[in-house]
Length: 146
Image (cartoon, rainbow, N blue to C red; front, side, top):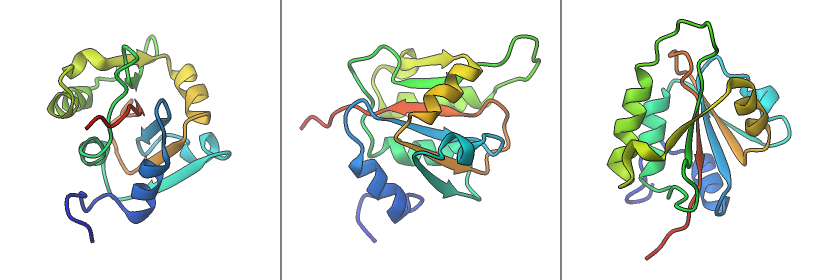
């Protein structure tokens, strides 16, 4: 155990977060996301039994968001014609605002298939058991300034 590290962050996840450099991207995927096929050439970390909001909150306690891009946080857009509601996005906005002074202004949307393409080149994908639809989120790492 370590002090100051949220317990939900496994040793494997902590190692990956530490290895990541500036501009590397991390996907936190919902339970329907094809994490294993999207991450077949990268790192997939299983966080079964956990939802995206609790993982996102824990990660943002130790993970700086990129300040050199407008939207270091990206959500998968709802497909045109799909009537799915996305109340989980409001949770994400609150969590991001808690950890970054820019609040929800640093959150953008990526079209679904572009999100898949970008996921294939992400440093890592975290597979959760999140049941909400369109609950996938991508984070771009910034630098630690002290």
